[in-house]
Picture 1: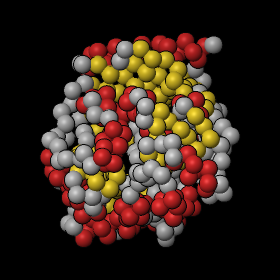
Picture 2: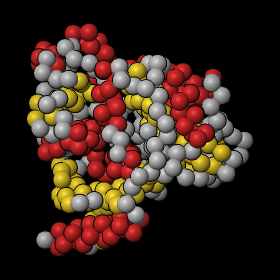
Picture 3: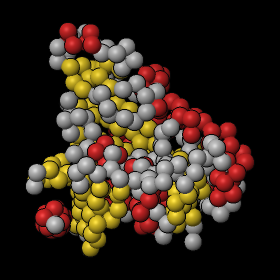
Length: 360
């Protein structure tokens, strides 16, 4: 049995652990916390700080097929980059691509350098879209309709044209020379500009070509997701993130049958080859609902990050429910079916099960 070692026990780690379970891969987690969020979703948890005890990480690498960083802590990532030559298994992370993707202003310069269509920079008139300058957080992101509000915006924030339209995502896995592109998904955004729901959709040919161009010019060695807006004027890329994404890979798995973790593992063996567009084989609905005053409210994934424990609550054919314990219980529903009707029936069953749990 293959074994992977994850560095970081939050939502990125959960996504990888989930796909590992589907592929029969054992998961070891390293997290400095005694009780990391996903401790009950992995096979083993090793509690230590890799920067303080690197020898333990090196020893664990002897018994792993790959190490995957599943956090965005700058100090931890910098340490992993330095220690990589001493590890006994591959470290599946492209530090150069991540360095470009984590800085949103740097990303925009990269987009411009290869003529990628993006929202205009600092437009002359509102509405504006303001977002954090680095990493994949959506905290602080908002739409500004009034020119006077710009005075209160920190100089570090990215200010760009607000582009209406659905937000879409596409993953790509590369070995530096060849690139395999996944299935497009729609990322449903809540009022805080965080993702609360993901559904599959047929891949836009133009978006696929843009994704390939972005990956190939970075000589990507790892996984990256590309987010864009399907505006009335066409695709507008808003960001890239060269790390294992959360939420969308699960929908790709259930709707197309492709396990992006398996693709990432294939980079070790050199088995990455250009692929054809993936069709939507099944319907899938992935969403987060929080219990509040006897009701279920759609929430973004940031709510899960504040939880104490995140684990499987129910599993049956075409339905999985994960429960996150925190200030208020939050449930993740993964419903799939060959038709929209079948998928909706699974969701109705999920709601019934959750409401029964809320009464206990």
